Length: 183
Picture 1 (cartoon, rainbow, N blue to C red):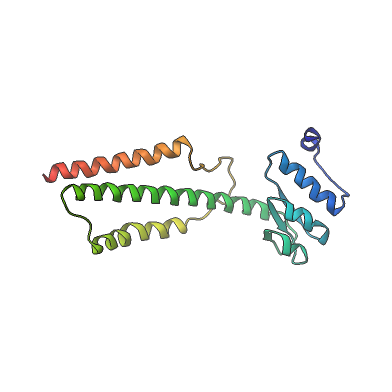
Picture 2: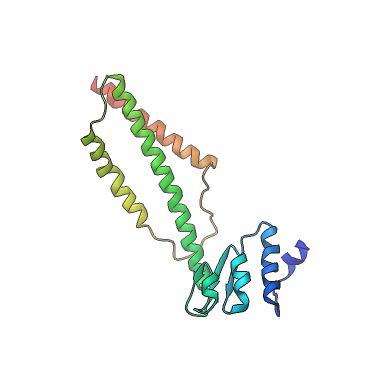
């Protein structure tokens, strides 16, 4: 049955229940399914799909994940670009927060070694100067206007972990070198 699904290009003249069943069959083959619908007969399929896009403001707008007021499927490209940008931004935010936490941890360990620690004003200054501007800049990034084939990194991939670990080693090295030069 899955071979038939993958070889068929057009599905036409279907009842609403059949549309929902077809979407469910595609989902069972580990595909990510987007469905565009413009009428009440598409409600079940829009709910079943991973991404449901209503091309109107009628009954389908209630069950769809996204609503487009004009009957044009160009919005799918924009939704994919926005989704990739959102995923990339989320991963970058996680990386940034992990790195910031480790760098502050290393700095605190250095200070505790000498019997001192960050004051409240120093912690506030770190957050104000380092965290806040970068968080704002990350959130202002926009998606690409053209869809490329490259997939965003996933959390837990070796290259992502290598990036985080190498940044932690660099930060530790700079902190240790600055300590060595000061003493």
